[in-house]
Image 1 (tube, rainbow, N blue to C red):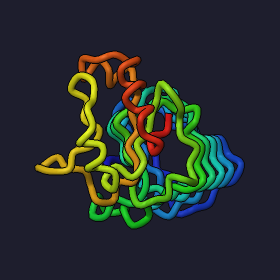
Image 2 (tube, rainbow, N blue to C red):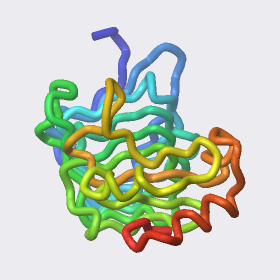
Image 3 (tube, helix red, strand yellow):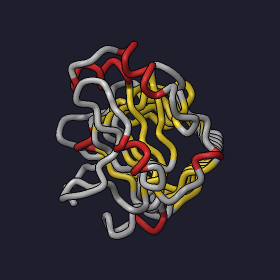
Image 4 (tube, rainbow, N blue to C red):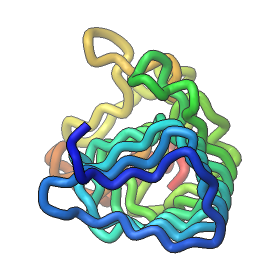
Length: 207
């Protein structure tokens, strides 16, 4: 590991404010064996510089001050936490075989209602315990169980709610998929209004 990296590990912290900031070529590591309880975690660092390894967050406020892209929270056990900010392509929960710390992954009783989630996945968890963001975000619950129903329906533009076959098929552990409608409308050459009208047909899509 590169000298000078910032490492929080092998301890428990309570009621602390933890500022995660990018500093030159230094990397930031949370864990292993770190517990943060009732802490405020302020994230001002890009994905490539942040690593979470076997870390437990309990009743923490996690404030994302810049968009977090393609980040895996699967090395984190999150319970009773509140998120704010923007995330794209992030994963939560236990993703079997993904990285060394996946067995520690969990998400429960967390509040994402003030978070913008786009192309984010929740895995091996009960999404009924989560407060999910509302429109213009929307979340498909049980995308694999509802897959045939979803893929047999008509959708605006090129929007495809779930992939059931081929190399990019959804993971069997995925229990929810979250999207941000304005971004999805641009990607799929449709409108937010058309997307909203389409998802309102299904009572298992939170919006």
